[in-house]
View 1 (cartoon, rainbow, N blue to C red):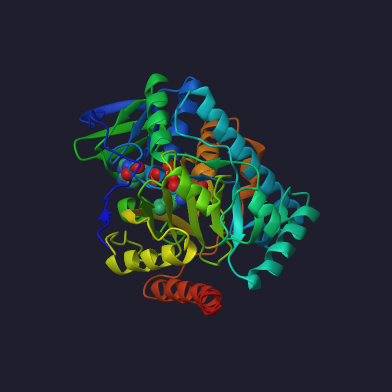
View 2 (cartoon, rainbow, N blue to C red):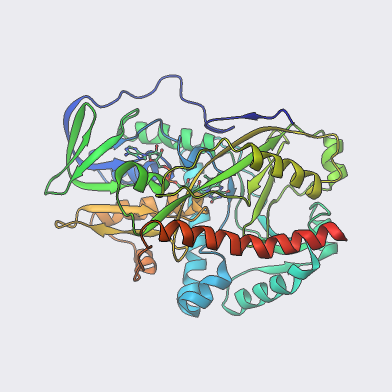
Length: 440
Ligand SMILES: Cc1cc2nc3c(=O)[nH]c(=O)nc-3n(C[C@H](O)[C@H](O)[C@H](O)COP(=O)(O)OP(=O)(O)OC[C@H]3O[C@@H](n4cnc5c(N)ncnc54)[C@H](O)[C@@H]3O)c2cc1C
C-alpha cells in the first residue's frame, strides 16, 4: 500500500493569502475563538445583527474538523434517534430530531444564501446494515422513530438496489434529508462570507488566555482583544489549547481515506448510481460516500484517545492497513481501485452525546457551542448561529433542548481507562458482526 498521508485533509488547503495574525490590542463587541463552522456561522450572524466582531483562529479557518470531516450532511443527533428517545424522553427526543432536520435545511439555506460552491449533492444518507444480525435492530429503530413522529423508513434489499446502493449494504434506514458535500469548500465559502460581512478575521493567532471580566480580555502571542462577549468555538481543541471544560469534553482522533477516481463503469459495477452517503449500523460506524470527482472516501470505525485529552497523532500506519483491508471487504467489486490518501481530524465528545452550548463566567459573558460528537456539520452551523442570536439578547427556544445536568468525566488515569473500556466494548460487538460476515 503506497497511499500518502495528508497532515490536513484532502479538502482543506491553506488559503494562499491568510488574514493577518493579531498584533496589538483591539476592541470589539464580540470575540469569537475558532474559525470552523461554529465560529464562522456565529460571526456571520453577529455581523448581520450589527455587532463588531473579531474572530481569532489558531491556524486558518477550516483547519479543524470543519475542513477535515467526511462531508455527510446528516440530521444525526446524539448516538442516534433511538438513543435520544430513550435517554431524553419521547417529547424531547422528537424535538431533538426535528431540530436536527431543521439544522440540515438551515445549512442548505446558508450554502444558497452565500452562493457557496461546495459540491453539495442532496442525495440523503443511509444507515446501512452489513450483516443479517443488524436487520432487526434497524427495523425496530425505524419503528420507534416513526412512532415518535420522526420520518424514517426501513428499506429492504430490493429497494436498496432500486435506489442505486451497493450490494455490500443489503438494507438500511434512509435519511432523505441532507446529502454529501465538500467540507473544505464549505469552510472556505463561510470564511469569505464572514469577511464580506465585515468580521475582522485574524489567522495564525492562537488564543493563550481568557480573562473573565466585563469586558473580557482574550490574549494572544502578540496582542489582545477586549470585548463584552466571548464565544468559544474551539470544539475538540478546547481542552488541549485552552485547558477549559476538562471535565465535560474529550477529543477522539478519526481517520479517513480516499480512493483513486472511479470510472462510470466502476460505479455501475458497484451499483452506487444513487450516490447517497452511507454509514453503517455498527456501534462504531464506518462511513462511505462518493465525491464530486467520483472517488470513494471512507473511515471512522477505529478511533484513538490520547491520555490527558490531548490530540492523538494522526499518522497511524496500522490503522491505515486495517482500512485498506476493510475496503476490500466492503467493496469486493473493486479489486482494481486503490486507496491513495489518508487523513483525519479530531472530534469532540461529550458523555451523553449531545452538544454543549451555554454561557458561563461571573459576568455571564463567556459563551460556548461545542461537542458535536462527530455529527457537527449541521449542528455546528445552526448552533453557532443560535448562540450568536442568544448573545444579541434573542435566544432561540431550541437552545433549551440542550439544557441538562452534565455529569463530569473522571480525571486521569480513570478517564483513559474509562474511554479505552468504552471503545473496546463498542468494538467487541462490531468485531462479532464483521467476523460472522467474513465467515459467510
Ligand atoms: C474525520 C472527521 C470526520 C467527520 N465527519 C463528519 C460528517 O461526515 N458529518 C458531520 O456532520 N460531522 C462530521 N464530523 C464532525 C464535524 O466536522 C465537526 O463537528 C464540526 O466541523 C465542528 O465544527 P467546529 O467549528 O465546532 O470545530 P472545528 O472545525 O474543529 O473548529 C475549531 C477551530 O478552533 C481553532 N482553535 C482551537 N484552539 C484555538 C485557540 N486557542 N485559539 C484560536 N483558535 C483555536 C482550531 O484551529 C479550529 O479551526 C467529522 C469530524 C472529523 C474530524
